[in-house]
Length: 133
Image (cartoon, rainbow, N blue to C red):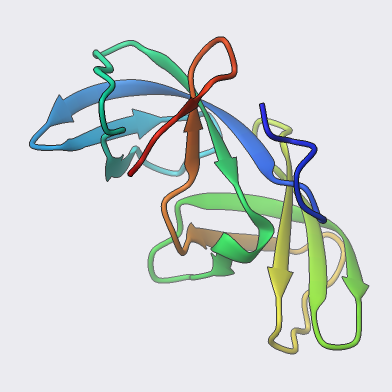
């Protein structure tokens, strides 16, 4: 998997395909508040019950109380001048990193509602990237 590319690194979440229809897949994860719908990978057939891993770039996560996909508890924030890195854990204990250019009053211990601003990268059980082309 491409966890070594980029700084900060992608966050990874285990998920299962719960339905497939009309060029999209619906996936469930212990980290999700509710199942999420994503574009189906081009050229690959994923059936119900398929295991996938989502790779979410820090800049693709955003705080969104109206449409949260993930709730995470903040462990630490890093002010980098022009941006802030927020390191948090999902309810199932997965580490997430969010990058924000907005000023924030988020503190250690806060539970934040997160949405994925763009489709995550999908990987199969062997760690091979599934194209979302």
